[in-house]
Image: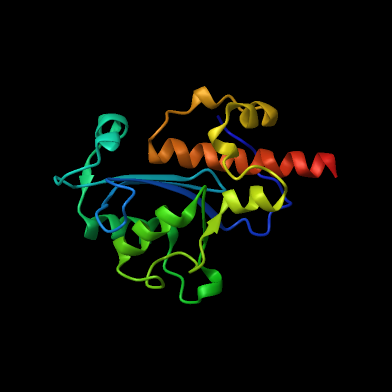
Amino acid sequence: MICMKNDMFYSDHAIFFDTEFTDLDIRKGELLSIGMVKMTGEELYLELAYDGTVHPWVKKHVLPSLTEKKYTKEDAREKLWAFMGRHKKEAEKPYLVAYVNQFDAVFWYDLFGSAKGHPAYWIPIDFASILFAHGYDPNSLGKKAFFTSLGIDKSAFREHNALEDARLLKCAYEKFFENLTVEA
């Protein structure tokens, strides 16, 4: 599903992203995959090499969808720098937009070894907080009725796949702001 860009956004230099990881416990978890979608529709999907233990839920719901080439962390970092660009000024770096960025950002920072030494603007954008600020349940993306209200068929997106989740987030973000503009 392709959703069209809306001119009402703060920046068109945003990248919607999602990650899959081995455990919600950030002290134990490791990054398994990352999906990214630019406002232009350009995409990047990477699966990382990992052979350690995973949470039973991840084993059941995430591992079966990890069927692509596996990259080392070093190779993944290079691919991400190439996809996002090597901007010298912080203000030129793209914004990362995640649904709930607390986990995605921690694993992102861990991949690069720094909260600032990576190709994105240092503050990740959290869509759940945007929803909350507009009077919506921050868990709206977990509810079919929210997608229906936006005119999105959530079943067209495969669950627990970082790229599919990033695509769905981009679409929901665009449709959400489109609907806010229509209501205003």
